[in-house]
Structures are given as structure tokens and as C-alpha cells.
Length: 526
Image 1: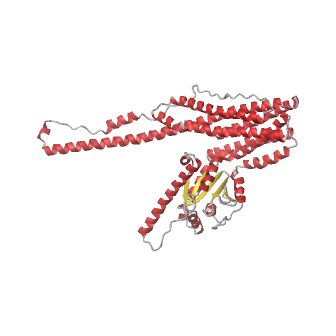
Image 2: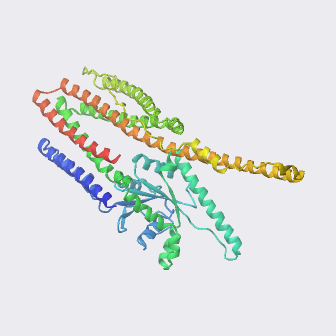
């Protein structure tokens, strides 16, 4: 816990230092627009670096129990509860170690939804509330959840149990049966939620990355109001509270905490770079500036597309690598890595061809030479290979055979004097023992196979995730080099004078240094 807090403080300090250096740079180099950047950095970067109390937003369709959940978590009635949309603005409630944020519902008016959209990037965890009675199947819920996945904001799906209808006239057996059937219904809904989100988002790892917490907010609040601790303890709200604390203090929360201020700071760098490019090109007209801005957007589109293509290339080898690890063939990983890299290079080459055609169309008056050959390289020598911790299956199997085989029956002279019926009985017992042993051996083999498969899959998934991060960094670096080469040519061809070019190069160098510092922080968060 203490290490996590210290790490958060260190990262916040590093980002703040970069932001302050950027502001000093704009005050010196761009006096006219420096007040604009000062305001923007203060609002969208500095204020988001206050990490003392993170923010947890409660989000979802109205009448799903959002306000009741907030009151249950706060252990007092702080939010108004009603069967109609009540929230039309953001409200924050101090929970102690974090702020609970009440927001307009998913189905709120457009103006209200915009309030949520503008605020959602300032929150560190989202509690997406669905009701067990009502619109949990509504596709709009899952589209909103898919947006949260895209934004990479951690969230927990909260299934609010609206209770099991029990008639006081029923006998205990009928009440018990009704509660059992209700619990089964909740489990089915829990499964359907994950299934629906997987379908809408297209992410097959939903079941591993996200969870559905079942609770009864009304029951928890009633326990608080009537001073019945047992109601609160069995409601599931206490479990959710502990889960929130865990999420706010693990490594995943650190990435979410600083993603938005870093993105906002990079946006400021992009705007500054655009000003520098326009000045260096000697053409500050709105049309030329717009074309440069479009080129920047094209680069970012390629970056995002390659991120998806790289992930797809890497994940497509999961089953193949899992099978290799089950065969205890760890050496194949390097060959697999090379195959994946070559696949990524091919896809990257296609994107470069598109970039070349785009530049020729947008900058017809400039003779820009773009090398469409991929500029990606990666050193595989001695970098991969692992000692698989998978145990020798056959040695276990042999041990089982030697340890558990039934002892052989002795036969001797006295056997001839046993009756025929007794010998047949012993033979049947012997066959039954052998059959029982074979069944046990088959069950053991199946259990061992499933264990080894799960272990191999986890290893393969971990190794491929590492590959994805490394290959994505290589692609980003190669794309930046291509883009910088294009911008450099534009600057050289269409310049006003040598001094402007020299000043622009120096300014661009400073921007690149800022980007490197930001990239170093992003790599720490990956």
C-alpha cells in the first residue's frame, strides 16, 4: 500500500515537472498563445494530478438503484432516491478514502449525458449499475460499457438485486424454494451480462478482465437505518467497498489515474507542434494549417489501427503457443515471435502505402519523397525462451502406477483346494479392483491434462502480452520516424528563411524531448 502511494506521488511529480517545463517553453517561445496554454495545462493536467482522493463514479440507467447504492456506501442518505431521473449534474460525496460521484443516467437527456461524458475521464473507477429487474438486457448498457473498455478506465459491473418476492403465507419449504430459484436466476443474469458485453465489445477476454458483483443496496441501507449489521454484512455492499479499495491501490489504478492528464498534455504538444510546423513551412494560411492538422490525424489513426492489428496478430497465436508449451517446447516461442513480427511488418507496410498516397494527395504542390519500405527492426537473438515450470506428466503417471496398482494375488498349492465358487468370487473382485484402478487413472490423466493446459495457457498469454507491448513500441517508434521525416521535408521545401527553420528545429527538438519523457512514464504504466 505504502509503495503504491509513493509511486503515485512520484509519477504525479514527474508529470507536473514536464508540464511546468512546457509552460516555461511556451512563455519564452510563443508569447502570444502562452496564456491559452497556461489555462489549458492548469485545468486539464495540473488539477488531475491531485491524487489524495481518487474518484469513483456511479453510472447506469435510472431506477437501477444508483442513489441507493451511494447511500449504502456512504452509510447515510446523501443522495435523493426516486423512481424517475433525478440527477442532471455531477454530485460528489466524500466517502473518506475516495469520492463517490453521482452522474446522470445512461438514458438521460443529451445535455445531461454530455455532463457525464466530460467528467468521466476525471474518474478513476466506474461502478456501472444494472438492476436484476428491468433493462439489464438493453443493448445501450453494453455499448456504454464498451466505450469504457476503449477508454481503458477500470470498472465494476454491479448487479443490484431488487429482492426475492416471498409471501408471508407461504410455509418455510416454499419460501426456501423461492429463495433458491431467485439465487439461480441471479447467477443466470450474471452470466448473461458477461456474454452480452463480450458480444457487443468483441473482446473475448471480458470474463478474465471484468467482474459482476451481486449485491442488494436496499437491504444494506435498511440494515444501516435500522441498526441491523447482519443485513448490511449479507447485502454484498461491504464486499464491493473492499473491492473498490483494492482497485484503487493496485498497479492497474495507477495507469488509469494518470492516463487522462498525460493525454491532455500530449494534446498541448500537438497544438504547439502544429504552430511550429506552420511557421517553418512559411505558409500560415488556414488551408495549409488544416492540411498539416489532417496529416497529424492520419498519423494518429494509423497508430490506433496498428495497435489493434498488432494485438490481433499477437493474440491469434495464443492457442498455438499454448499447445507448444503443453508439449514442453519453450524454444518455439522465438520462432513464433518472429512470425508475429513479420505479420506486423506486412500490415505496417500496407499502412505506409496508404500514408504515401495520402501525402501526395494533400501536398500536391510539394515534391515530397516518402520511402514506403517498413523501417521496423527487432533483435530476437537470445532474447526469448523459458524454462517451463510444467511438471513431467509421465513421471507422475508412472508414480501412480507403481504406488497404487493392486498387489498381485499369490497362487500356490492350496488354491487347488479352494472351491470353484470361491475362486470365481476372487476373480470378480480382482477384475473390479483393476477396473476401479483404470477409472481412477483415467480421471487423474484428465485432471492433469486440464491443469497443464491452464498453466500453459497462462504462460502463453503472459508471454504474448509482453510481445504486444514491445512490438507496439517498435511500430510507434517507426511511425514517428516516418512522420518526422515527412514534416522535415515539408519544412525544408516550403520555408520562409533559414532562421525560421533553425528556430523551428530547436523548438521541435524540445517538443520531442517532452514526448520522450511522457513515453517513459507511459512505459512505466504499461
